[in-house]
Structure formats: C-alpha cells, structure tokens
Amino acid sequence: MYYVVCFDISDNRVRYRVVKVLKGCGRRVQKSVFECPDLNEHRLLRLQKKLDDLIDHGSDSVRYYRLCRACVAEVEWIGGGEPPAAETYRIV
Image (cartoon, rainbow, N blue to C red; front, side, top):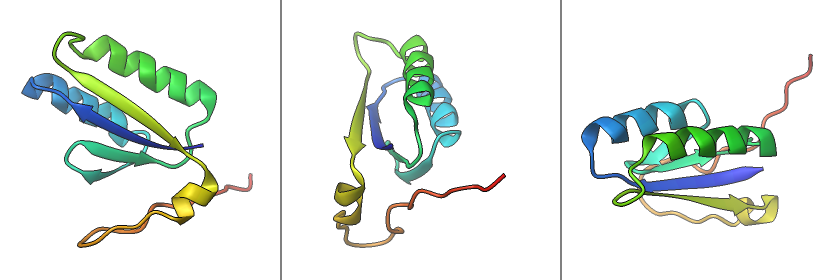
C-alpha cells in the first residue's frame, strides 16, 4: 500500500533519527514528508512502532496517510520534485 508520512518534531536529534528510519521505507519529498510506496501491513506496523518509540508524545506528531492506487495516479504538484513513485515488483 502507498503511504504518505508527515511529521512535526521539535528536537533536532529525534528528527534526525526519524528521518533515518523513514529513509529505509521511502523517499523524502519535502523536509518533513516521505512517500512510502510499498508498505505492507507488517512493515507499516514496524515503522509505526519504531517512530512511536522515538518521538515525544507531548510535543511531536507523526501522521500516516494511506492512498489507493487511483489516488496516487491523481496526485498533482507544482514546482520541483518528481511524480509519486509507482509500485515496483521484483521477480525472484
């Protein structure tokens, strides 16, 4: 499933750690926004647990937006950047 993950984190060290975790799941499209094109339920739960353990629940927030294939195809943007990453498949 395709997810957009957005965060607002005040502490630089925590923010760096969150970014490091998110880079393993997708690509950064803005300073606090990542697109994660192929998160299955298990990987999403692992990601949520990792981020939950890192953030300060009193001052930080992380949001997860699930997008269906049709919604991803309708994403619009202006300015720089690349279109949303399409799901890729590997044949093993």
